[in-house]
Image (tube, rainbow, N blue to C red; front, side, top):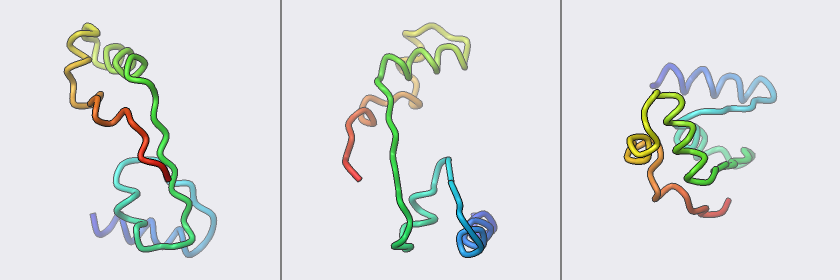
Length: 77
């Protein structure tokens, strides 16, 4: 993880960066000039996507940790 953080921070210093992925909020938490955005989609759409991706029924996909209902509310910016 240290190598990934070092590479990301190097890119931030050198120019404009759009980071998409997990753990960005950990890597960038101490950098004040970073705009952090969280985009969520409705639970039924997420369940459908997981079902398609994993080739399982919607019922099985709905019980997946990838579509946790606790992640459906927005906490603001």
